[in-house]
Amino acid sequence: MTISEKLQLTSEEKRIFGKLNSPMKIQDYLETIPINFEKRGETCMSPRLVVRGQKAHCFEGALFAAAALLFHGQNPLLLDLKTIDGDFDHVVALFRKGKFWGSISKTNHAVLRYREPVYKSVRELAMSFFHEYFLNNGKKTMRSFSNAFNLNRYQIKDWVISEKPLWFIDKDLDISPHHPIFPGRKTIELRKADPVEIRAGKLTTWS
Image (cartoon, rainbow, N blue to C red; front, side, top):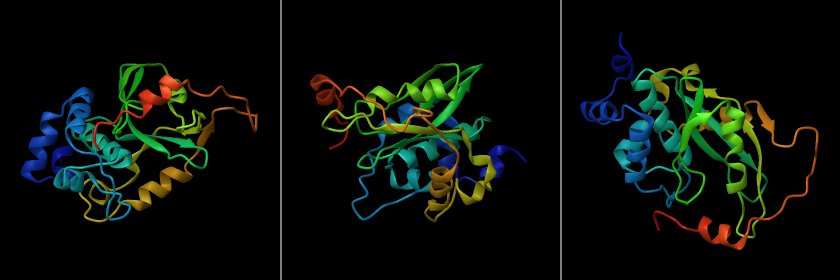
């Protein structure tokens, strides 16, 4: 049985996934759909529901990207970036080109976006987000990152085409092993982002 057959996609889903045969095309597709502002409460939609609803937040976008990568024979991998209280975690889909890592990201902001496959390790890629991750007052907030989290641990039908919220994946990713940004140090003095960085960070795609 092929991956396409295992995914049990509709003809429309196959058409969409079939076109998204590179990380760049997956990222371009995610840029065409609005951000999910969760106006009716928090959601954790499957890739199928993202296609149907034509919206996604970062976690939903990462799941969709991972499913598209799986459709084309790559491992469906997530990376979780954890922050201090008062800010939100960010999740991206990981991919590899040869020995190098890149990531696909759904975000509404000018930062925390797509990463080209130029990073030698998951840590190196994760750290590329560190200086972009700050609050409106300039305080930098990223504190840890996960291992590459392989969605092949789940049955395909339980996440790619699920009609139910995928909170179990959100929970499993959250409690999976994470690596601290400052190993062995509880606190560290950090310079705040510059005012121009803060202004740039407030640029959004969808209002």
